[in-house]
Length: 543
Image (tube, rainbow, N blue to C red; front, side, top):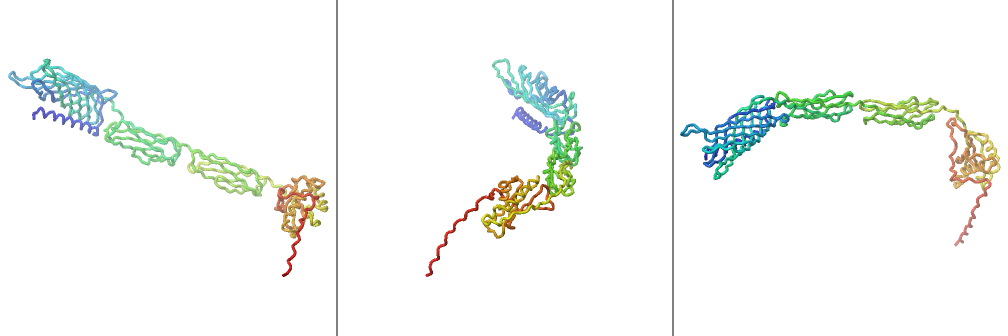
């Protein structure tokens, strides 16, 4: 195998290795700052593998040569530059006339270059177009178009100086003599170069930054606030560190990207959680950024309350229900308390029962309800008034006599003449009383049959009928109440009940008769006919 065949394979191997290095170099970082130069000037040795044929055979490798370039990096894209490249390659040899040049190749190209600037290792790639001056040995020199693609890796030794460890370019062109008998041969050239790079000027380094967020931004004291920090313009392959502080509450975790602020006991106001984001491998400068996430502890509001009393007027011994309607603006749980200026108060959560006592007669009792939230301990109160009227003089039930129903066994419910005279006097007396009512209590004798157990109710209803309908002096029926008094004899008793409060716990006798069930009968109504009884059959004769 010829030397010319081995060298291209080595060049390809170098190219593959260079691509691997470029891919891995992005993960490398050094303890120095990244530099973004405005101009980059390169010069160094270059070896060329023409990889082309001419009439007399394959063109050998050209081991003598140089390459030089200048790159201007754009202000808006510091990694992208405009490139101008030039190089010259020659093989020197000696013949009978003395030292002379053999094969020579000159290159002049321009294009674009993208370089990943980093603190120490900076890979780059480029594309160029231009022209090549090809001059094979013993053949004429020709200028032909050329297209190139390549890349490399620089080792940065400082802001101004770098070593180009490797630069590998693939360059396509062709060679053809003017004689039509000659064929056109493509040259797939490989150029390997290395040298020094000078950085001229410097763009400002893109500053790293950090942004903080808080959620929610408004809370009540004691509620948690979640915070998060996000860095930008940091090397995405580096692991960042975080440090949190806050002037409102306590950080649950101070060295994580996301954390939580415990606001227990923090007074209402505006606060912030501050984060410092650092790239420990980002160099001595531009490796840290800070940010703040603001949040507010809201001023809590007291509960909204209202009170009502039902009924609002009660007598001594009667109850009134006091109801409190309470809502908390924050939705927090509440506790309740009650107080009163009089009476007996029985609390039960959002309601209370007030019972008037003798000492409250003629007074107005004020009941106060208080609702307190369980978190901020803020309270609101409301009141309701209950009036207890003054006690009036009591009245006594008056006994106005009775009527008996003993003289007419056939009509034991009938108002007879004796009772009629008594009722006529009673009706005149009742009309003389502007207020009050008359209770007619009907009784049944114990000897009267069980089937006539409603006889007392019938007697009281019939008496009322005479007073309001049959009698000469008609009485207002709303002032007369028939009542059933049980088994106390064949009579009706009359009790006048004055208007007012009964003295000494007096009670009206008997129970009110349901007049829809017991129909009244006039004193002139005929007696009911008795049914005839069939004779009993004779006993059969004795056998």
